[in-house]
Length: 54
Image: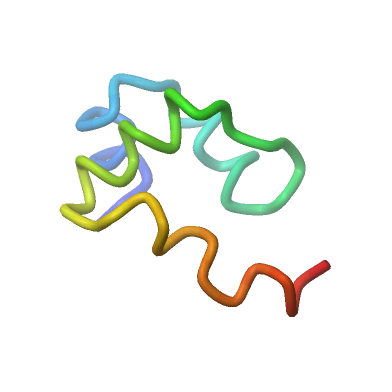
């Protein structure tokens, strides 16, 4: 899936999605909810293993 397609599904700007993906900004809870819904996954999946990246 392209960033453009995902940003369209989430109704967020592609540039914002790019910054989130590259770790330059942190998403809001609302954005995380939109992403999880668009990717058909549970919100908790974004946090599995997150402690190893801190």
